Length: 159
Image: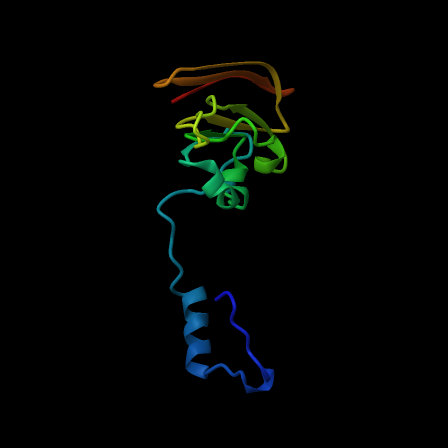
């Protein structure tokens, strides 16, 4: 609704029909939809949680990812087909409380975005002691040794 302007707007003219109000109450209390899965934010916080997601491409879906509380309850968020350009700074795709680890494919000479790329977000609760990235035109991997005071994990992201 870009460009819509309401002139002489009078808030006192806004009203809610009682039937609408009753129906909204019913929908919020009696007719709630039960999810067919358990959201990650409801899982035990002691469990190590990983999300692997194909965003194709990340720059189109970053805002959704950035604001998704279910995804952000994971310890690791791995993104394939990120298609980021090496010239784009990490800050452009940062997620609060996560360190970003990128394995961008080399930029295409004609200025288009590369076809692939891996981005791995690792929560600040973890320390990365080692990382290694390998990619070809058909195969991409990122290897991480990550740990906290209570656990150590070797994480291999493959696409």
